[in-house]
Length: 328
Ligand code: UDP
Ligand code: MG
Image (cartoon, rainbow, N blue to C red):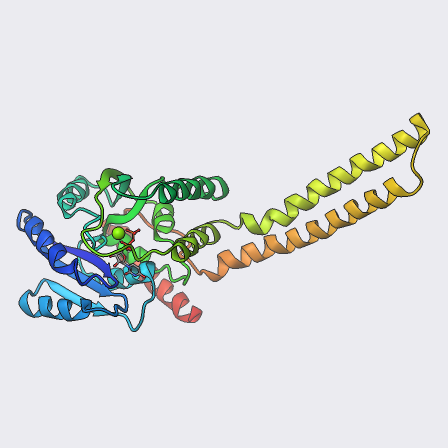
């Protein structure tokens, strides 16, 4: 029987875990798959770990891992995916905002041959106007400055085929934004829409500060555009300075009424300011390249391969292993 792994990061979710666990059990009973439920306790300070240990005692499906401290949602998810052994891995939140009833829908799409089944949150019930607005602005910005397209409302509720999870394990950058990374990985992707209900219990763990951090990570991990900003600004200034010089020449020789010295000084200031920005921008461009290289991402991912070529790919795996070892 095939195995499904469900990965759930939990951070101070003592009032949600039991309810979530029951809901998952109800759903999994309706599917003919073996399953494991991997909870990653992201350094909770409440009774979450106790509850997880109790569930583990009672049910072999439950496999809790505890991180040494709070490392953040994205790293907790990564840890759970590293430990998962399923033929497909589903990641979801433990607060019931990612409805377990949707699991069969994701699995169905996977059975139909999709390797990444991403959910898109249409609306979230009971979410502030501000959160909606900031989230929309964030996706707009991200999609305008980076090459990767991330659909608005994308959540970390998704199903990944084991093949994708294996490939994902080669991505070891510290600053990570899973939505963007997975969207950029390719493979056969599809979307499922859902309406996120309010949390079952407790409050959101994403403070304004954490949201800003995540947004920054998303932008910085997915775009070197901010680094190129100096270059564009510099070229713009240089252009303006040329206009100023034309204005100077025009005033002097055509109108014959130039204020002595003023235009020349401004023109020079703008011109040299522009040159400095260009130089900074160029450095930015190189840093951008370095930034891409130090991530040491796989150069390419193979989507499908036939048996005869697969034998060769083992050598390829070893090669990757070697390069990863060299990197650490
Ligand atoms: N979470 C986590 N570490 C954190 C913050 C959150 O593991 O530092 C977990 C949390 O327990 C929940 C999920 O990530 O299962 C989503 O968090 P939350 O519901 O607070 O986010 P929101 O739904 O408000 O975006
Ligand atoms: Mg939530």
